[in-house]
Image (tube, rainbow, N blue to C red; front, side, top):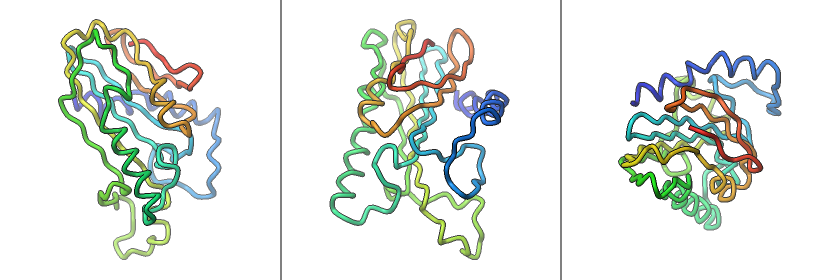
Length: 196
């Protein structure tokens, strides 16, 4: 299942490249070294349903969830980070999975420099010359694995609660593999649901 989730972005890469060629609205004046652009207001969600296992992997700029990307030093900023972490720690509520599916959280993992995790140094200079850019673009990464006793009840994935909880998130680029195949969809607060 993990390999399936890891392969999903590469399977949909041609779609992403075509979309990027048509619409590139990234406002920063610098380049990024990864395929996934850091764009405020936009999050990415990989979703895979395989038998009774549902995996969701959410990646978002910290700005969308916390309201800032710098290290939390003030008490107010630390409180915001703690609140967001507590919200992300409740994926059954956040993703509004139908009760009829009887899903339970089998595993979950949250990562971000804001949570005290070590930042990813991949692509950075060994001598530290790029420290001035370090931490400018904090990402929050959440990975959830659910076991669903009745996966047939998972007809839709409704992200309305996610948009309400994190209103700075304007759209979510979803890559989904489910019983009906794979699809790449962009959802918004006005149209937050997609079919499995």
